[in-house]
Length: 284
Ligand code: GUN
Image 1 (cartoon, helix red, strand yellow):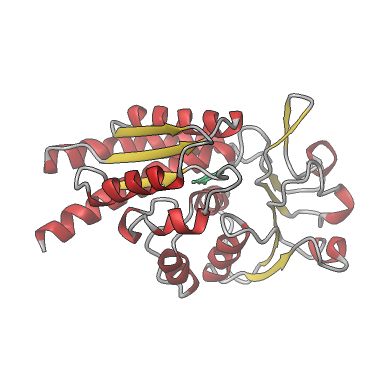
Image 2 (tube, rainbow, N blue to C red; image 1 turned 60 degrees about the vertical axis):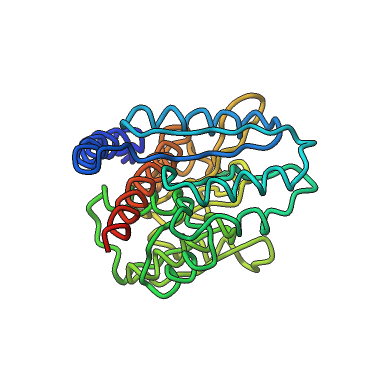
């Protein structure tokens, strides 16, 4: 069975648009997301455009700042400090990856935890690790919503995450662990990766290698989540060999139309949450 991310995403956005209306009615302003993009990576430009479009779609405000790859880092840092101090801005996002020469860790450290709608800050990652999450990073958060949409219980299941990035693999593993799965994280140095993957009831592929997960790596009846977005000859291809794996999996996400549409939706959810938190803490 296919897991239709597009559909789950559309339903989530429709509910979110209602919640945004409620927020505007209550506080007399729109939640606002500020996005910074540096350089001219076409994939990043598309993502940023869709983030801005997504804000408008659910009734939120947005600000976007585009910088050339030759911009001094201090100029971007100054903008981040300004946005950090601006009470009209609820969420700040720096599109990654940054071009070579920029200090990603430093620039991201200028985003206050309360405005870190990506959930990338050490505090937000730490709270997730302690099973007391505040802001959950968007892609793994979206995957959890997709898993929930299948109606299957997660507790006690064997979950295998392929990939250990700070943005997807690690928070994904923590979320699955918090949901009482037994979690294994595999990566480029893992020995016997195929044998480990075959034990998975829930297999999450987030390694950025087209069609890496082949049918022999998947247990009959497993749920397969494909986080990969690879461009091969101008076509989008996931990390899973979909055509061959689909007959073995009980549930599988397609690429495109699976995990992808959920990421921006969860970003919008995180932005509304940040705005609500800001209003609540202003009252306190
Ligand atoms: N680049 C690819 N995915 C993401 C994301 O979720 N957030 C940010 N900031 N950059 C990204």
